[in-house]
Amino acid sequence: MRKVAAAVLLFATIGVATASAAGASSGTSTVSFQCVATYTGGSTSGLLGTTIRDQLKTALNDGLAANPVSGDLNYDTPDTGAPGVALATNPTFGVDTVIPEFVIPNIDGVEVKQATLTVNTGGFGTVNLAGAGVSPSSLQSSIPVPTWSPLDLKNPPAGGVAAAASISGEATPSAPGAITYQPGAVRLKVTLYAKVGTFLGDSTVTQPITLDCTPIAPQSDIGPGTVVAEPDPYPCRADRPVTPHSFTDVSSGAYFNDSVSWLVASDITSGTGPGVYSPGAKVVRGQMAAFLWRMECTPTPASGHGFTDVSGGAYYNNAVSWLVGANITSGTGPGTYAPNDTVTRAQMATFLWRLAGSPLPGSPAAFTDVAAGAYYGPPVAWLVEAGITTGTSPTTFSPNDAVTRGQMAVFLDRYDVNT
Image (cartoon, rainbow, N blue to C red; front, top):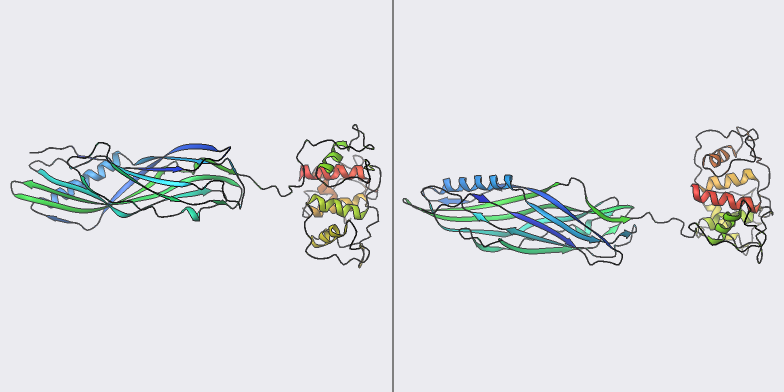
Protein backbone atom coordinates (compact mmCIF):
# COMPACT_ATOMS: atom_id res chain seq x y z
CA MET A 1 0.00 0.00 0.00
CA ARG A 2 1.18 3.58 -0.72
CA LYS A 3 2.14 5.60 2.36
CA VAL A 4 2.69 9.39 1.96
CA ALA A 5 3.52 12.11 4.47
CA ALA A 6 0.76 14.35 5.79
CA ALA A 7 2.03 17.80 4.75
CA VAL A 8 0.03 20.74 3.48
CA LEU A 9 1.78 23.99 2.55
CA LEU A 10 0.44 26.99 0.67
CA PHE A 11 2.35 30.19 0.02
CA ALA A 12 1.15 33.52 -1.38
CA THR A 13 3.69 36.09 -2.43
CA ILE A 14 2.70 39.67 -3.12
CA GLY A 15 5.18 41.75 -5.07
CA VAL A 16 4.99 45.47 -5.76
CA ALA A 17 7.17 47.30 -8.24
CA THR A 18 7.16 50.65 -9.95
CA ALA A 19 9.19 52.25 -12.66
CA SER A 20 11.94 53.96 -10.73
CA ALA A 21 12.02 57.74 -10.86
CA ALA A 22 15.10 59.91 -10.68
CA GLY A 23 16.10 60.42 -7.08
CA ALA A 24 13.79 57.62 -5.95
CA SER A 25 14.23 55.69 -2.75
CA SER A 26 13.13 52.10 -2.34
CA GLY A 27 12.24 49.87 0.54
CA THR A 28 11.61 46.18 1.07
CA SER A 29 9.45 44.72 3.81
CA THR A 30 8.21 41.26 4.72
CA VAL A 31 4.56 40.71 5.51
CA SER A 32 3.32 37.61 7.32
CA PHE A 33 -0.09 36.13 6.55
CA GLN A 34 -2.25 33.72 8.46
CA CYS A 35 -4.70 31.66 6.44
CA VAL A 36 -7.88 30.05 7.72
CA ALA A 37 -9.59 27.29 5.76
CA THR A 38 -13.37 27.01 5.52
CA TYR A 39 -15.23 24.18 3.85
CA THR A 40 -18.57 24.34 2.07
CA GLY A 41 -20.50 21.70 0.20
CA GLY A 42 -18.58 18.95 -1.48
CA SER A 43 -19.32 15.25 -1.87
CA THR A 44 -17.93 11.86 -1.00
CA SER A 45 -18.52 8.36 -2.31
CA GLY A 46 -17.45 4.91 -1.18
CA LEU A 47 -17.12 3.42 2.23
CA LEU A 48 -14.11 5.53 3.32
CA GLY A 49 -15.02 8.75 1.54
CA THR A 50 -16.11 10.60 4.68
CA THR A 51 -13.09 9.39 6.63
CA ILE A 52 -10.72 10.52 3.91
CA ARG A 53 -12.42 13.93 3.70
CA ASP A 54 -12.07 14.49 7.46
CA GLN A 55 -8.43 13.42 7.34
CA LEU A 56 -7.77 15.93 4.58
CA LYS A 57 -9.45 18.76 6.51
CA THR A 58 -7.40 18.00 9.61
CA ALA A 59 -4.17 17.89 7.61
CA LEU A 60 -4.93 21.17 5.91
CA ASN A 61 -5.78 22.96 9.17
CA ASP A 62 -2.68 21.58 10.90
CA GLY A 63 -0.49 22.54 7.96
CA LEU A 64 -1.73 26.12 7.87
CA ALA A 65 -1.35 26.50 11.64
CA ALA A 66 2.21 25.19 11.54
CA ASN A 67 3.25 27.07 8.41
CA PRO A 68 1.57 30.46 8.15
CA VAL A 69 1.49 31.85 4.65
CA SER A 70 4.17 34.51 4.15
CA GLY A 71 5.35 36.74 1.39
CA ASP A 72 7.68 39.61 0.56
CA LEU A 73 6.29 43.01 -0.36
CA ASN A 74 8.74 44.78 -2.68
CA TYR A 75 8.24 48.25 -4.08
CA ASP A 76 9.97 51.41 -5.21
CA THR A 77 8.57 54.84 -4.51
CA PRO A 78 9.64 58.37 -5.39
CA ASP A 79 11.20 60.00 -2.35
CA THR A 80 8.98 63.09 -2.37
CA GLY A 81 5.44 63.99 -3.29
CA ALA A 82 3.00 66.85 -2.95
CA PRO A 83 -0.63 66.81 -1.80
CA GLY A 84 -3.07 66.79 -4.68
CA VAL A 85 -0.41 65.84 -7.21
CA ALA A 86 -0.19 62.33 -8.65
CA LEU A 87 2.98 60.47 -7.80
CA ALA A 88 5.73 60.47 -10.41
CA THR A 89 5.28 56.74 -10.99
CA ASN A 90 2.28 54.48 -11.39
CA PRO A 91 2.79 51.50 -9.10
CA THR A 92 2.12 48.01 -10.47
CA PHE A 93 1.14 45.33 -7.98
CA GLY A 94 1.79 41.67 -8.74
CA VAL A 95 0.48 38.57 -6.99
CA ASP A 96 2.25 35.23 -7.26
CA THR A 97 0.38 32.36 -5.65
CA VAL A 98 2.48 29.23 -5.22
CA ILE A 99 1.27 25.81 -4.13
CA PRO A 100 4.49 23.83 -3.70
CA GLU A 101 3.61 20.47 -2.22
CA PHE A 102 0.18 19.30 -1.25
CA VAL A 103 0.43 15.62 -0.32
CA ILE A 104 -2.46 13.33 0.50
CA PRO A 105 -2.12 12.21 4.14
CA ASN A 106 -1.29 8.65 5.08
CA ILE A 107 -4.32 6.47 5.71
CA ASP A 108 -3.61 2.85 6.55
CA GLY A 109 -5.05 0.39 4.10
CA VAL A 110 -5.65 3.06 1.46
CA GLU A 111 -3.95 3.39 -1.89
CA VAL A 112 -4.10 6.77 -3.57
CA LYS A 113 -5.06 6.22 -7.19
CA GLN A 114 -5.68 9.81 -8.27
CA ALA A 115 -5.59 13.23 -6.62
CA THR A 116 -5.87 16.65 -8.25
CA LEU A 117 -6.14 20.18 -6.94
CA THR A 118 -7.81 22.97 -8.90
CA VAL A 119 -7.39 26.62 -7.94
CA ASN A 120 -10.52 28.29 -9.15
CA THR A 121 -10.90 31.75 -10.64
CA GLY A 122 -12.69 34.22 -8.41
CA GLY A 123 -10.11 34.55 -5.70
CA PHE A 124 -9.37 38.11 -4.67
CA GLY A 125 -6.79 40.27 -3.00
CA THR A 126 -6.12 43.94 -2.48
CA VAL A 127 -2.96 45.99 -2.22
CA ASN A 128 -3.80 49.37 -0.80
CA LEU A 129 -2.04 52.65 -0.37
CA ALA A 130 -2.40 53.66 3.24
CA GLY A 131 -1.12 56.36 5.52
CA ALA A 132 -1.73 60.00 6.24
CA GLY A 133 -3.68 61.81 3.58
CA VAL A 134 -3.60 59.28 0.79
CA SER A 135 -6.41 58.60 -1.67
CA PRO A 136 -6.19 54.86 -2.34
CA SER A 137 -9.46 54.25 -4.18
CA SER A 138 -7.83 53.91 -7.59
CA LEU A 139 -5.61 51.14 -6.26
CA GLN A 140 -8.23 49.02 -4.56
CA SER A 141 -9.00 46.36 -7.11
CA SER A 142 -9.85 42.68 -7.26
CA ILE A 143 -6.94 40.45 -8.17
CA PRO A 144 -8.19 37.38 -10.04
CA VAL A 145 -6.38 34.11 -9.39
CA PRO A 146 -5.82 32.05 -12.55
CA THR A 147 -6.97 28.45 -12.84
CA TRP A 148 -4.36 25.69 -12.66
CA SER A 149 -5.74 22.23 -13.23
CA PRO A 150 -4.93 19.51 -12.78
CA LEU A 151 -2.12 19.48 -10.24
CA ASP A 152 -1.12 15.92 -9.49
CA LEU A 153 -1.04 15.68 -5.72
CA LYS A 154 0.53 12.23 -5.80
CA ASN A 155 3.53 13.59 -7.72
CA PRO A 156 3.68 17.35 -7.11
CA PRO A 157 6.18 19.28 -9.23
CA ALA A 158 9.32 20.54 -7.52
CA GLY A 159 8.68 24.05 -6.29
CA GLY A 160 5.00 23.81 -6.99
CA VAL A 161 2.95 25.65 -9.57
CA ALA A 162 2.81 29.44 -9.80
CA ALA A 163 1.06 32.07 -11.87
CA ALA A 164 0.67 35.81 -11.53
CA ALA A 165 -1.95 38.47 -11.83
CA SER A 166 -1.48 42.20 -11.38
CA ILE A 167 -3.32 45.45 -10.98
CA SER A 168 -2.07 48.98 -11.52
CA GLY A 169 -3.20 52.43 -10.58
CA GLU A 170 -2.19 55.95 -9.71
CA ALA A 171 -2.03 57.44 -6.24
CA THR A 172 -2.81 61.07 -5.53
CA PRO A 173 -1.87 62.30 -2.07
CA SER A 174 -4.57 64.45 -0.56
CA ALA A 175 -2.67 65.76 2.46
CA PRO A 176 0.81 65.77 3.96
CA GLY A 177 2.11 62.57 5.44
CA ALA A 178 4.02 59.42 4.62
CA ILE A 179 2.61 57.18 1.92
CA THR A 180 3.11 53.55 2.85
CA TYR A 181 1.98 50.37 1.16
CA GLN A 182 -0.25 47.93 2.98
CA PRO A 183 -1.43 44.53 1.72
CA GLY A 184 -5.05 43.55 1.99
CA ALA A 185 -6.62 40.14 2.41
CA VAL A 186 -6.03 37.34 -0.12
CA ARG A 187 -8.59 34.63 -0.82
CA LEU A 188 -8.06 31.43 -2.76
CA LYS A 189 -10.81 29.07 -3.79
CA VAL A 190 -9.55 25.52 -4.03
CA THR A 191 -11.28 22.29 -5.02
CA LEU A 192 -9.66 19.03 -3.98
CA TYR A 193 -10.51 15.82 -5.81
CA ALA A 194 -9.12 12.54 -4.48
CA LYS A 195 -9.72 8.97 -5.56
CA VAL A 196 -8.45 6.14 -3.41
CA GLY A 197 -8.69 2.38 -3.49
CA THR A 198 -9.27 -0.06 -0.65
CA PHE A 199 -10.04 -3.73 -0.41
CA LEU A 200 -13.67 -2.63 -0.21
CA GLY A 201 -13.50 -0.67 -3.46
CA ASP A 202 -12.76 2.87 -4.63
CA SER A 203 -13.73 6.00 -2.67
CA THR A 204 -13.70 9.61 -3.82
CA VAL A 205 -13.72 13.05 -2.22
CA THR A 206 -14.64 16.34 -3.90
CA GLN A 207 -14.12 19.18 -1.44
CA PRO A 208 -14.37 22.95 -2.13
CA ILE A 209 -12.05 24.90 0.16
CA THR A 210 -11.81 28.65 0.73
CA LEU A 211 -8.55 30.00 2.14
CA ASP A 212 -8.85 33.49 3.64
CA CYS A 213 -5.40 34.95 4.29
CA THR A 214 -4.95 38.18 6.22
CA PRO A 215 -1.74 39.99 7.17
CA ILE A 216 -0.74 39.50 10.80
CA ALA A 217 2.54 41.42 10.84
CA PRO A 218 3.54 44.12 10.80
CA GLN A 219 0.43 45.67 12.27
CA SER A 220 1.25 49.11 10.91
CA ASP A 221 1.59 50.27 7.33
CA ILE A 222 4.61 49.11 5.40
CA GLY A 223 7.38 51.70 5.08
CA PRO A 224 9.34 53.64 4.23
CA GLY A 225 7.07 54.92 1.47
CA THR A 226 6.98 58.42 0.04
CA VAL A 227 7.14 61.53 2.18
CA VAL A 228 4.46 63.97 1.14
CA ALA A 229 5.63 67.40 2.14
CA GLU A 230 3.36 70.16 3.28
CA PRO A 231 3.11 72.49 0.29
CA ASP A 232 4.68 75.87 0.90
CA PRO A 233 1.73 78.23 1.37
CA TYR A 234 3.96 81.18 0.58
CA PRO A 235 6.29 80.14 -2.23
CA CYS A 236 7.19 83.76 -2.90
CA ARG A 237 8.98 84.05 0.44
CA ALA A 238 12.67 83.30 0.10
CA ASP A 239 14.49 80.62 2.06
CA ARG A 240 17.36 81.77 4.18
CA PRO A 241 20.21 82.62 3.75
CA VAL A 242 19.56 85.03 0.91
CA THR A 243 21.65 87.10 -1.45
CA PRO A 244 22.61 90.41 0.19
CA HIS A 245 20.77 93.50 -1.03
CA SER A 246 22.55 96.23 -2.98
CA PHE A 247 21.15 99.29 -1.23
CA THR A 248 23.76 101.93 -0.52
CA ASP A 249 21.86 103.37 2.45
CA VAL A 250 21.68 100.13 4.43
CA SER A 251 25.01 99.25 6.04
CA SER A 252 26.03 95.66 6.63
CA GLY A 253 26.18 96.36 10.36
CA ALA A 254 22.62 97.69 10.64
CA TYR A 255 20.28 95.61 12.82
CA PHE A 256 17.82 95.51 9.90
CA ASN A 257 20.41 94.63 7.22
CA ASP A 258 19.63 90.90 6.93
CA SER A 259 15.88 91.58 7.12
CA VAL A 260 16.06 94.05 4.22
CA SER A 261 17.96 91.45 2.16
CA TRP A 262 15.18 88.93 2.85
CA LEU A 263 12.48 91.41 1.82
CA VAL A 264 14.26 92.02 -1.48
CA ALA A 265 14.77 88.29 -2.12
CA SER A 266 11.06 87.71 -1.42
CA ASP A 267 9.93 90.47 -3.80
CA ILE A 268 8.30 92.32 -0.93
CA THR A 269 10.24 95.48 -1.71
CA SER A 270 12.53 96.88 -4.36
CA GLY A 271 13.38 99.98 -2.36
CA THR A 272 12.27 103.56 -2.76
CA GLY A 273 14.52 104.30 -5.70
CA PRO A 274 17.62 103.07 -7.54
CA GLY A 275 20.03 101.74 -4.90
CA VAL A 276 18.15 103.11 -1.91
CA TYR A 277 15.82 101.58 0.67
CA SER A 278 15.25 104.63 2.93
CA PRO A 279 15.36 102.70 6.22
CA GLY A 280 14.69 105.81 8.32
CA ALA A 281 11.59 106.86 6.37
CA LYS A 282 8.23 106.35 8.01
CA VAL A 283 5.94 103.63 6.68
CA VAL A 284 2.60 104.91 5.35
CA ARG A 285 -0.62 102.93 5.09
CA GLY A 286 -0.33 102.48 1.32
CA GLN A 287 3.12 100.93 1.74
CA MET A 288 1.84 98.81 4.62
CA ALA A 289 -0.90 97.37 2.44
CA ALA A 290 1.63 96.54 -0.28
CA PHE A 291 4.01 94.90 2.23
CA LEU A 292 1.32 92.62 3.64
CA TRP A 293 -0.13 91.76 0.24
CA ARG A 294 3.29 90.80 -1.10
CA MET A 295 3.97 88.79 2.06
CA GLU A 296 0.94 86.70 1.07
CA CYS A 297 2.28 86.31 -2.49
CA THR A 298 -0.04 88.89 -4.07
CA PRO A 299 -3.36 87.03 -3.93
CA THR A 300 -6.11 88.20 -6.28
CA PRO A 301 -8.68 90.22 -4.33
CA ALA A 302 -12.24 88.95 -4.42
CA SER A 303 -13.69 92.40 -4.92
CA GLY A 304 -12.83 96.09 -4.84
CA HIS A 305 -12.24 98.07 -1.66
CA GLY A 306 -14.72 100.95 -2.16
CA PHE A 307 -12.43 103.65 -0.76
CA THR A 308 -12.64 107.01 -2.49
CA ASP A 309 -9.06 107.98 -1.61
CA VAL A 310 -7.43 104.91 -3.25
CA SER A 311 -7.28 105.30 -7.02
CA GLY A 312 -7.44 102.34 -9.36
CA GLY A 313 -3.97 103.11 -10.68
CA ALA A 314 -2.24 103.24 -7.30
CA TYR A 315 0.49 100.63 -6.74
CA TYR A 316 -1.31 99.64 -3.53
CA ASN A 317 -4.83 99.46 -5.03
CA ASN A 318 -5.05 95.64 -5.29
CA ALA A 319 -3.28 95.32 -1.96
CA VAL A 320 -5.89 97.46 -0.20
CA SER A 321 -8.74 95.54 -1.89
CA TRP A 322 -7.27 92.26 -0.66
CA LEU A 323 -6.80 93.62 2.89
CA VAL A 324 -10.46 94.61 2.99
CA GLY A 325 -11.59 91.20 1.69
CA ALA A 326 -9.37 89.45 4.25
CA ASN A 327 -10.84 91.54 7.11
CA ILE A 328 -7.43 93.00 7.91
CA THR A 329 -8.66 96.57 7.56
CA SER A 330 -11.91 98.46 7.20
CA GLY A 331 -10.25 101.81 6.60
CA THR A 332 -9.95 104.86 8.79
CA GLY A 333 -13.51 106.06 8.30
CA PRO A 334 -16.49 105.73 5.96
CA GLY A 335 -15.13 105.45 2.43
CA THR A 336 -11.54 106.30 3.32
CA TYR A 337 -8.33 104.32 3.77
CA ALA A 338 -5.89 107.23 4.26
CA PRO A 339 -3.03 105.67 2.26
CA ASN A 340 -0.61 108.49 3.03
CA ASP A 341 -1.07 108.45 6.80
CA THR A 342 1.84 107.22 8.88
CA VAL A 343 1.56 103.74 10.41
CA THR A 344 2.02 103.69 14.18
CA ARG A 345 3.44 100.79 16.14
CA ALA A 346 -0.03 100.06 17.49
CA GLN A 347 -1.45 99.92 13.96
CA MET A 348 1.47 97.78 12.79
CA ALA A 349 0.79 95.30 15.58
CA THR A 350 -2.88 95.15 14.63
CA PHE A 351 -2.15 94.65 10.92
CA LEU A 352 0.22 91.73 11.59
CA TRP A 353 -2.11 90.22 14.20
CA ARG A 354 -5.03 90.22 11.78
CA LEU A 355 -2.80 88.88 9.02
CA ALA A 356 -2.07 85.91 11.30
CA GLY A 357 -5.79 85.30 11.88
CA SER A 358 -6.22 87.25 15.13
CA PRO A 359 -4.86 84.55 17.46
CA LEU A 360 -5.66 84.93 21.15
CA PRO A 361 -2.58 85.69 23.27
CA GLY A 362 -1.94 83.67 26.41
CA SER A 363 -1.73 86.71 28.65
CA PRO A 364 -1.97 90.51 28.39
CA ALA A 365 1.06 92.54 27.38
CA ALA A 366 3.22 93.63 30.30
CA PHE A 367 3.97 97.09 28.88
CA THR A 368 2.95 100.01 31.04
CA ASP A 369 1.96 102.11 28.01
CA VAL A 370 -0.47 99.53 26.60
CA ALA A 371 -3.80 100.02 28.35
CA ALA A 372 -5.80 96.93 29.22
CA GLY A 373 -8.73 98.01 27.06
CA ALA A 374 -6.77 99.32 24.09
CA TYR A 375 -7.78 97.92 20.69
CA TYR A 376 -4.16 97.01 20.07
CA GLY A 377 -3.74 95.24 23.44
CA PRO A 378 -4.23 91.66 22.19
CA PRO A 379 -2.19 92.30 19.01
CA VAL A 380 0.78 93.64 21.01
CA ALA A 381 0.58 90.76 23.50
CA TRP A 382 0.55 88.27 20.63
CA LEU A 383 3.53 89.95 18.89
CA VAL A 384 5.54 89.59 22.11
CA GLU A 385 4.58 85.92 22.52
CA ALA A 386 5.43 85.24 18.86
CA GLY A 387 8.87 86.81 19.23
CA ILE A 388 8.14 89.57 16.72
CA THR A 389 8.80 92.43 19.15
CA THR A 390 10.27 93.03 22.58
CA GLY A 391 9.05 96.61 22.77
CA THR A 392 11.11 99.77 22.87
CA SER A 393 12.21 99.05 26.45
CA PRO A 394 11.55 96.31 29.00
CA THR A 395 8.39 98.16 30.12
CA THR A 396 7.26 100.15 27.08
CA PHE A 397 5.97 99.44 23.59
CA SER A 398 5.55 103.06 22.41
CA PRO A 399 2.28 102.39 20.55
CA ASN A 400 2.00 105.91 19.13
CA ASP A 401 5.48 106.05 17.61
CA ALA A 402 5.74 105.82 13.83
CA VAL A 403 7.20 102.67 12.27
CA THR A 404 10.25 103.17 10.09
CA ARG A 405 11.03 101.11 7.01
CA GLY A 406 14.05 99.60 8.76
CA GLN A 407 11.89 98.51 11.70
CA MET A 408 9.19 97.22 9.36
CA ALA A 409 11.72 95.01 7.58
CA VAL A 410 12.59 93.38 10.91
CA PHE A 411 8.94 92.96 11.91
CA LEU A 412 8.09 91.25 8.62
CA ASP A 413 11.20 89.08 8.74
CA ARG A 414 10.42 87.89 12.29
CA TYR A 415 6.76 87.33 11.34
CA ASP A 416 7.83 84.95 8.57
CA VAL A 417 10.29 83.09 10.80
CA ASN A 418 8.06 82.80 13.88
CA THR A 419 4.57 82.18 12.49
